[in-house]
Image (cartoon, rainbow, N blue to C red):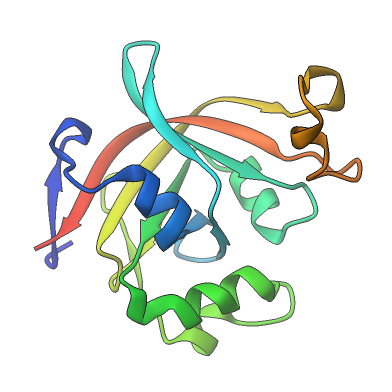
Length: 169
């Protein structure tokens, strides 16, 4: 963690709408022995049950899904624009078929406290502990602009406590 400073979620000055929607993120789950990462541009942050939380949305056919299902922690890593090609690769290729670390040149780092994996090249990292998970579904969609994104393959939403925020020093 030497390149990073740990702060509280309340101390984060970066705009989460830009981080998630424009910069994108890598959602990484697993452990130092075996993990996978995927690009996402959907998510959110806020307060739930008195804690700072992040949400992640993952379709069950994604390789990362099995990793996030089988662990307590995952990370959301945000990068500067110079890593856009790595993010595009991680969002379009499956970890079942490619070694994403080898292909992108990103450097995995393991958090000492949680065992969660993130990347040295990130500018901001949320280390998240799962609190609640539920599949989105057609019955709960209130408008058609929700259902147009789906063909029966709804995401599972993970609402997770942000246990640490790391920012590049």
